[in-house]
Amino acid sequence: MPASKPLHYLCIRHGLMERLRDGETVICAEGYLFVFERRGYLTAGSFVPEVVLEHPNLVQQQYEEFVHAGSDVVLAFTYYAHREKMALIGREDDLETINKRALRIAREVADRTGTLMAGNISNTNIFVDTVPDYREKIWQIFKEQLEWIVEAGADYVVAETFDNFGEALLATQACKEFAKDIPCVVTLTSHQGLVDGKPATMDGVKYNEAFNRLADAGADVVGLNCTRGPATMLPILEKAVKVCKVPIAAVPVTYRTTKEHPNFISSIDPISGEPLFPVNLDCIQCNRKDIHDFGKRVQELGIKYVGLCCGNSAHLTRSLAESLGRKPPASRYTPDLNKHWLLGKDDKLPSLGQESKMKYAQIIPKVE
Image 1 (tube, rainbow, N blue to C red):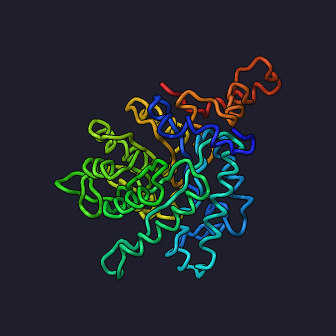
Image 2 (spheres, helix red, strand yellow):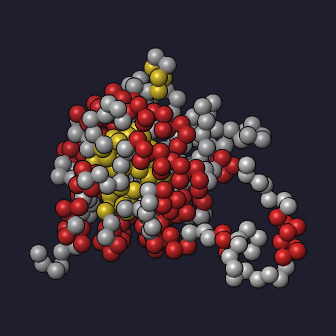
Image 3 (cartoon, rainbow, N blue to C red):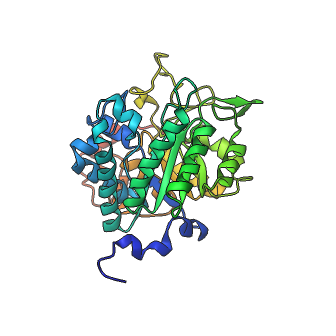
């Protein structure tokens, strides 16, 4: 094979489906929208990834940071970089540029780091009867993005965050039409739709049925992403793994959702009682142990495609990777509290100030 071939051609034998069939777990770090909103490079509300156009160096850095933390995949940041969203902020003319730039940088980082590169299509928010010709418009949105994804040499496609089964099915069909030679991961998002008391899509399809219908339509991996945190996503997937025809994906938000408030859109401040979504969710942020426990549980269930969505950051991705027994480059800096001046017992800690240390130790909670 010519030396000029990109690295992903050399690694094609170890693509997504080969890894899953071999029993490997694939980690895909997501959550770029919230990352860049927190950093001050993206507007909450429209949530359009303009940072790709204005600060591509930061996008490259974030791709690299997630790989450093343990992601096996560089997911191109084209979520919400579609025709409807670009029109919302008056930047339709930048549609092709934003997609191709995000994809090109993702491919370069993946080739350099030996990881997989995934293209991304997403919910359009126009899957409603009140939008004239909405199915045709959505089909065109998927078509143009998928053609750019294939042109960029993506290893697979992530089609995600569909609250309606109908739009997820349309996305699956588009993947099979316009990106037929690469796998597709199709994930629904679970709000509070119910059918016969069981969680369902907003258009009334129970999740187990939805997963298998998507698999029948050609989806290679199916599952859930976004809206629900680990605590309220896992009960749905615990049932799905028993009946699903293809591998399951588990990609929750990193927030503490509950039975009373099963998704982060419905979550309220435990002190004030005010709504938290989308910019005040910090007070219900999952901690590292929450994510570590999530990683352990998905492995017990045999779920091999995992990741973290909105609220994700590098230290949480590292916790997920370490829960699987891995040591990504970022593990070099995993906390070592045995060297902490107050909590540690390392012999090299100075004895000077032990009296002060004893006073502090009196306020540290004791775990029975």
